[in-house]
Length: 174
Ligand code: HEM
Ligand code: HEM
Image (cartoon, rainbow, N blue to C red; front, side, top):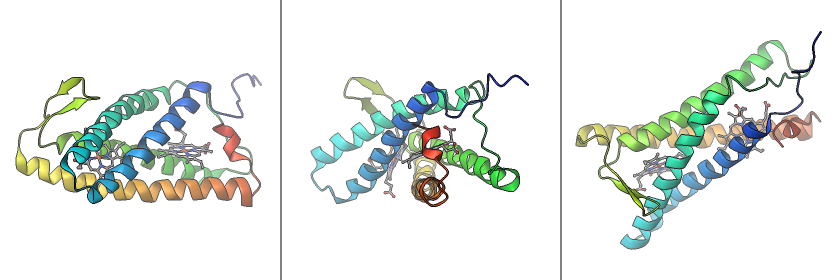
């Protein structure tokens, strides 16, 4: 059998995208919630626009990441992860992607005005309809909660596999 494509860890591009997106998404979540505590309008606007700018970059990276998944070398799980267990992991990863795209897309549709990308380029409001904006704000809020729960589950699952089951899963993404 030709084993040349059997890898023990994700390719460099996938690893880079995973960690850059992870930092971007975790930062955007923390700041998104922290904005509730900022009363100064200028400081609020600064962090809000920075968050939208970073999320715009994350959107481009996530699309690249999504497409790259179909072409990258596969990274099979060992013989200890098969059947329903493997199915559950793949399902959770698919769900993770879905939730991220719901958060990103709803973020754009909810906008009640445009924003300046890193203070440089004007991005116009995509949908000019207050009721639609409001509906997608609700979707964004729900999506952000689901994303936080998913992230906690993801980190807990990785920690369990790595440290409790002594299956060095972290090395697949390092
Ligand atoms: C918001 C942040 C994160 C997101 C969206 C995310 C998403 C994902 C996704 C979708 C995968 C499947 C592989 C892929 O398609 O790229 C994955 C794999 C992985 N992630 Fe994360 N991740 C995040 C944060 C983290 C953190 C903080 C850790 C460290 C504990 C981590 C460790 C791993 C590991 C070890 C894998 C490989 C697991 C496997 O092959 O089954 N991730 N991640
Ligand atoms: C990486 C993906 C994203 C994450 C993790 C994220 C996270 C959050 C969080 C946690 C909140 C607060 C929710 C609440 O109050 O319940 C929020 C609000 C908000 N998000 Fe997002 N978001 C993301 C993407 C986007 C995108 C792409 C846009 C639009 C370009 C956007 C625009 C907004 C706006 C306008 C608010 C209201 C507060 C403000 O003015 O900044 N978000 N986001």
